Length: 79
Image (cartoon, rainbow, N blue to C red; front, side, top):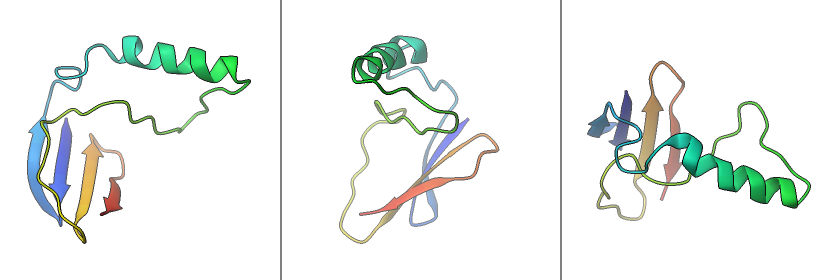
């Protein structure tokens, strides 16, 4: 389950993480190939952001957007 929040308030929840983006393997594989061509690779614990698992959210300067995946620690960014 993925949960998107804005300023601590839940704005969206998703159970099907591949519903909007397609299969994760199909999205990550071309990026891995591009990295390999540049002499790089993905590393354990890398975060890869290649699409959205929720419909677009209305944002404005100063807000904090967070994403929590299962029991993992949330990832957030302040706009």
